[in-house]
Length: 194
Length: 97
Image 1: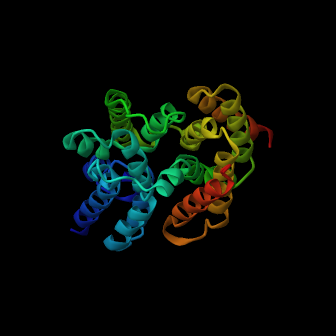
Image 2: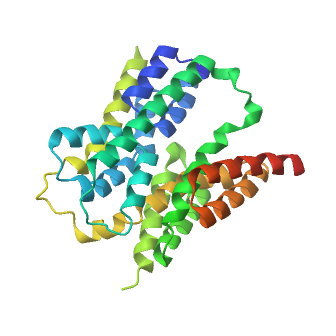
């Protein structure tokens, strides 16, 4: 973000109040090309639409927690925390969640993320690009996805989502992500054994 | 000036999405179709995030490294092993191709 002309303190502030990596990367690119604020916010909405699905999914396990906890858990939602939590409950969709499990994972992820962002801001160009550590992000998502693919419907959901996102990649505002999600979910429902 | 509007807007929109369903009162039931549909959200959304990075990157080493990572994740189901194997494969295929 700093590389695209955002002050280091503002980049850190965005990391803390927004706490959503993919939308930050996209926002940095848009801000660098002087995109209007409203369009940046709209793009953020689309990229982060998946959190609404996470919210609905986590509600099955944590919907009965006290309001204060739910407000905090909402803020701490992240792709990998969600991935860890649903992996734990994959076989028991209706069991109440363990708040300590979620909070433990979420706080570690939050701290690691903020430290990494701070390090990125401070060290920035210091890490050689030749290490290609940026590819660790999709690899981590692969590691979270594959263990979920235990039945035909789940495999279908992933394959259709993958094909859709690749086919619709040229759509503006990363609309390909919510579109692929919907297509994948539809495929999963269609392939369920009745 | 408009950077503050952007930051505030991004924060509000993102928090509202995260809070949405979690803040519904407990006695409101999630409709059964939604409940079934939600089962597929992680596989679909996570795949939508990583697939373009693996498939649409210039060059073939990302595709090859992604295939190695999928195989390792399938066989051992270990996050760290998957990342290390994928990065190693990325560099190996870059050198080979």
